[in-house]
Amino acid sequence: MSVAEAVAVGQELPSLAKEMTQRRIDVFSGVKPRSIHTDEDWARQKGFRTTLAQGMMSTAYVSEMMTRLLGAGFVKGGTLSMSFIKPVYAGDRLTVHGVVRETRPEGAGTRVVVEVWCQNQHGDKTAVGTASGLTP
Amino acid sequence: MTEFPKLTYDALTVGEEFVSDTHLVTPEDVEAYAFAVDDHHPWHSEPSPFGGPVAHPTLMANQALSLRHSKYIVHAGLHAKMEFNFLEPVRPGMRVQTRGRVIDKYERRGRQYMVTEYVTQDAQGTTLVRGQFTQMLIPEGTRHVGR
Image (cartoon, rainbow over all chains, first blue to last red):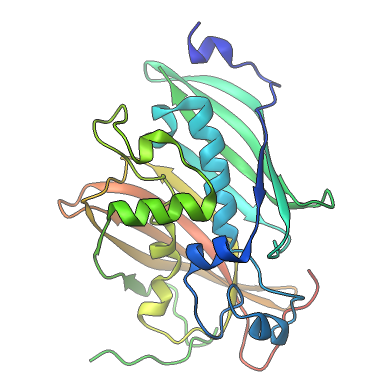
């Protein structure tokens, strides 16, 4: 069965779980003074309870989920649009979710459109959006 | 010699352009990114359907997000929205550069935002990724509250 045949509107994708350790945030953002991502004192001065992960880390998680679903058709031909609606703090545990919302013909293949979101350990959504990619 | 004024909402002009330095994508970049986002898909270190290894599609996104630092001292900010169109894979060994242009700025509920469109290309001018992003400015002397 092809990927296009295997994907159905309403289908939930396997979720991912991500531990937001300060070490990973440091590597992602680069350690700098006066950074809300890597300088805890500065983050507090700016009104946050501790350091925050970059929103961009959540786009990487969705990219991983979509690459697992669509493979090369996401790496070349994929789209991703996300809004970051709540801070993600160092120490949080995120889960990454997707539900197929649409399939439509595009060129010789099919574009698969997925509603995506991340939520923290409290069940609060931290990022929401849409991703898509092509199947042969 | 580049001068770096402080970024303020008033100083920012719709239509102004940014350009990043050129960055050589190394296998170490990809390895570090894989650690940071805990994504160790084999295509990032072994042959992929595109031939050799390919980077995570979002690898160079921070080159785009940092564009305003090429002209300004940025006090603090938050990333509000991000859009990508992945047109060609980013591969280790490429020299990539991102160009951007401010396409909008606006104030909403007492907060200041800027919108930048960007294009990331390789040394041959092939477009790898394009899109736009929205960033909130946190002005000097203020705290971010309410989220």
